[in-house]
Image (cartoon, rainbow, N blue to C red):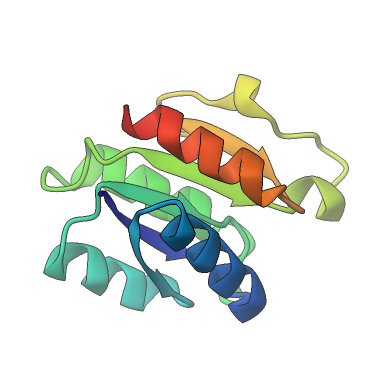
Length: 129
């Protein structure tokens, strides 16, 4: 059983994601704000992070958190990150897993919302194995 932290400002998405991953056998918690997510990650290191991009404080807060984790946080830099976002619905640019890179999008995988929860669970399972 893995410990997964879901970071998403939408309570309904955070809850649904947490329930689906919990039913798949994982221990899951969620945070609705970037600041509380950072505190939570340092209080208990997750085995995987499911991270949204857009938050009320910034449309790029998820990108910035992923970059901070990968480039400046020795404790968390190896934790797999699954970016799950509706960014493509909000912007004219299409982000996908082909945009993953070491600097701008330093995540391990990418899913576009709305997410099929079975696909989410399968992707998480693959990332944890």
